[in-house]
Length: 75
Image (tube, rainbow, N blue to C red):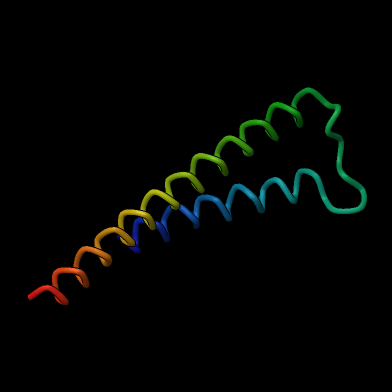
């Protein structure tokens, strides 16, 4: 479960780094270029999907741990 979250956040980081290279800080790149805008939207969607997947993995892990410890305390 944790390794699944790690994979999702690795995808997030890779896409975010691409965004930073496409639109560098201070200069900002060329967001008005249609190609850059299209790539930027794709990368933003990729980061959103990866982060959502990572959060789901962490929620699953959290619920597992809650249930595990609740069971340990009961028995």
